[in-house]
Image (cartoon, rainbow, N blue to C red):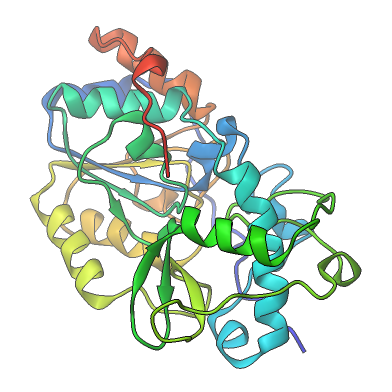
Length: 303
């Protein structure tokens, strides 16, 4: 039986109300040393839904868990069929104004780093450098037996060849790149093995129920220690993988600022939460700082 991961959060205390004034964010950026922590909400304006916001995918979709993926061949067949179809749409997504604003802040020396919980590569496509992909990236595939890494585009070509005519219509696309398909639509989809050892392939992402590599977590903790402030963009901070950095910054007396339309699990640690759409909020901030963000022509092609 497929169990639903614990992914919801309900406020149990009165939280500070959100504001529509992005001034504190501009003030923090103007002094530099800002560490960005981004979540799925920054990519919604690129056509990738989030998990928990209005229309979020958790209402219709249970993300694959690591335990199910590794234990059940049929679950892997279902995952790869859905992910293969989703990749066609997911891989075409392009950075939005929020991603471009973050890249512009970085180019102007205002950021100490960028940590993203997203697996879509859109920060890098917008031009951000040195992005820490906390949960990995859908652009890579890893073999669970030999550890070989390969590009997602290469696997997509192999799956196309093995599943000629696979053209179901998905009901939706999810933040993890998984498309909504029925078991009937999955059918007898063929999964291909590692070309090096014949082992099981998995996207190089951290599934629910799987731990973020400890060395990656420690590197992020170092970034928090070295930052002047922490700016959270588009994350509800429901799961501990992101919330721990907010708590660390707050314990150290560093200002925490959040831009998210809905309340978050980190609000009580924050100096402010700006309840505005990210693209509009960050474009306004950039304007106050005199920084142009219209860099569509410089968006990088993702592989």
